[in-house]
Structure formats: C-alpha cells, structure tokens
Amino acid sequence: MKQFFLLLTIALTTTISAQTGPEVTSWIQNLTGETGYNNIPSNVQQVQYSTQYVYVTATCIPGYDIGPWQGNPNTPINEDFCYKITRTPVQNTGTLTNTSLGHIGVWTNGVSIFNAKDAMSYNNQNIWLRNAYYFEGQGFDDCLGHPAPNGEYHHHVNPTCLYTDTDSSQHSPIIGYAFDGFPVYGAWGFTNVNGTGAIRRMRSGYRTRNITDRTTLPNGTVLQANQYGPALTTYPLGAYIEDHEYVQGFGDLDEHNGRFCVTPEYPNGIYAYFVTLDDQLDPVYPYTLGPTYYGVVTAGNVGPQSGHNVPGEPVTTYVPDTSGTIGLAEDISRNLAIGPNPATDYILVDFSRTTGKANKIELFNMQGALIRSIDNPAITEKIPMHSLSYGVYFIRIQTNNGSVITRKLVKS
Image 1 (cartoon, one colour):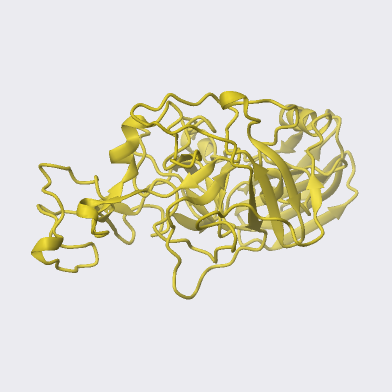
Image 2: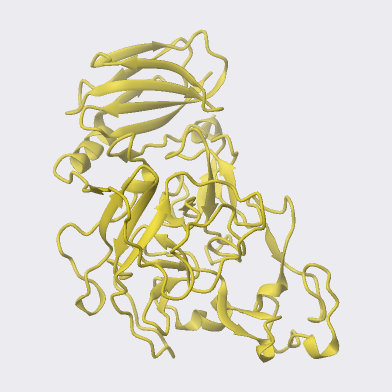
C-alpha cells in the first residue's frame, strides 16, 4: 500500500498564463538589481516573447556564489547574451546537428550549457576528444562550473546549485532549454514516459566501452596505428568521449540524452532532456544533452560571437507578478484541495480556502486528449469520474490571475 501511494506523487506547477507557457515563465529573473560574481548583475535580466520565439537576456552570471577555480586563470565577465529560443520545437528528421563547442543551451538562470568536450584531443588529431569532466573537473567550483577563456561561466555537467538535485520525492524542475527549444530537466523524472510510476533518477543510455586499448571507435572503425588513443593505464576509461557507447535500452534516455514523456509542465507530453547522475549523484556521460540535438537548432545561438540576438519582430516583455503570483502559488500549495485521489465516482476542486479562484478547469487523459472542460467553475466544483476508465489523468486549472496549476490524478 505504501508503494502504491508513492505512485500518486502530486505534480504542481504555476505559470503566469496558458499563452506564455513554461518556455517563457521558467526563467529566474533578476527583478531587484541583485549582483553576483564581481558585482555583475546576476541571473536573467529580461525575458521577451513573440508567438514564435522567446528572447532571454542574461549576463551569464548566476545568483549563487561561484569560484574559486583551481588551476583556471580565466575570469567570468558580463557576456550580455540574448538567446533566441523557439516556442515550437520540432524533431530534426534530417541530418542530426552535433552539439558544438561553446554554448549549446542556457540554464534557467542565464548561465550557459556546454557539452561534454573540453576542445582538446589526444595528439591534436581530433579523433580522441577529451572529456571536460575528467580533464577539467578538478577545477570546477562547488557548483560544478567554471569560466571559459572568453570569460563565459558555464556548466558541462549537472548544475548542482541551481536546483535540489538530491530531491527524489518529486519530478525535477525545468532547469534549462537547449537551443533546439526543448526543455532540460534535472535528474529525476517519472518512471514511465506516460507520467506514471514512482519518481526515479533518469539513467543515461551510454556506458563505457568494454575495450582494453584505444584502437577502435564506438562505430566499429578500426584505426591506423598512428591514430590510436592513449593507453588505459595512462588515462582510464571515460577520460575520452570515444570511450563511451550508446546502447539501445540500456537506460531511460536516448542517444541525445532525452526522451518524449509527460512532465508536470507538459501534461500532453514533450521531448525533454535530463541531466544524468549515477547512484552517488555524480555526473554521468553525456551529462546534459548530446552529442547531437534531438531537434532543429535555432540560428543565431551557436558558433563564434553567437548569442547576441536582437528581436526583429514585435515582442512582449514578460514580468512576473511577484506581488501576487508567488504568494498565490504558496497559498495554493497549502490550501487548494483536489480529491479524493485516487478517485472513483468524482473529484472536488475546492478553492474555498485560497485567495484565488478558478476561471477554467480542464481534464486530460494520458494521451493528451481533453476529456472535460468547465468555464467559470464554482468555488467548489464537483467533477464526475465514474464513467472514465481506470488510469492516470491530469487536471489543469487556470486561475483568475492567470496562473496555471497542473496535478496528476488516478482513477481507481
């Protein structure tokens, strides 16, 4: 019985409006002029959006303390980035795009996401590429980040100070967006892609190869003698990118380090990347996303001098209503009643003990189909469930101040 109730973990998210969505509302905005490293304004400075894109302006300096970086002479600077994130991401069905050196996405605090490489290779042959976590990890700070030569502070691996990566009781939050527009989550997700099952750590589909020397590549290519990698007694397995291989079904995630699944923010399902950790919560290759993107990458974000986009279309500036929205979220988390859960004949959505009120209630099945929609519901709305099949459903509630609450329900 205890295990059964663990499966009923409630997912709660609050956003400003159904029209904006998580890709607009998930950013950690600096609304009070706070500063971080070297008195540089921290976190995200501005979020603007159109129908097609979100423009995220940030210094690349987080709100948490960073440094020192052992053996790293570089110094973080204000990068004044403006990243352009598509709001309608799509799968790339053509030639896949490699995650390049430099930024490949952006964390929700405006700090850059880098891939697993450190830009160097064995004997400078560009065959055996160095793993940044192995070769540079000793110089990461306590938040597992460091500055690049251009002053760009970034994380190659799990940004441990950005979210509570030890919390295995609930689905991890969105902690970033890749430049193909798909979200990046923390390490914990639902066991099953349809949003059911206990919360568990998402497992990488990559493993270290079963090799005794570096004479072949993961795709089976047999190298010439002058292309061999270093001996395993010199650099252990895992020190190079080519020490890893993807195995279908080995973990929870695909070769891009993601999967299509239901998440609290996307009850209809979304392709999502996850950061990967081992059972000791240490980073596991490929760490964030990669080595290729799942989707089509938006131009202007990758490559030399990139990340300085200027909106060429009418945009709306998104400003969180900190006077009401945060208070409402806390109020709802304590006082909104939705139950019984699991349900048999009906559920009650009860706003009588909150300061908010529902403008609309929608019930979806696991396939994302709308089952029932109620406009301007009563303070306490009774929703029949007796005619529905057994299984998992999502209820989405739009409140009178534009917030959106999503919770998972079970019909038993």
